[in-house]
Length: 93
Image: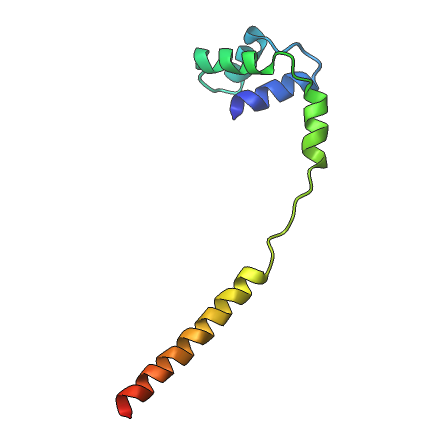
C-alpha cells in the first residue's frame, strides 16, 4: 500500500511517477524498497489517468449496513426461546 501512497504523493506534487522517483520517496519515508513491487506498481500505473481514478473513487457512494440483519437475529432468539419452552412443557406433561 505504501507504494500506492508514494505514487499518489508524486502525482500530487506534479512529479513523474518513475521507478527512480518512487524509490526516492519510499527511502525518504524510511521504508525498504522491494524492486519487484516497485516495478509492478510502475507497470500497473502506465496509461492510468490518476485524476480520473481519484474522482471516480470519490464519487462512489458509501452505504450504511441495513438494520434488518439485527432484526432477524432478534426474531430467531425469540423463536428459540419459544421452542425451548415447548420442549420443557413436553418433559413435564
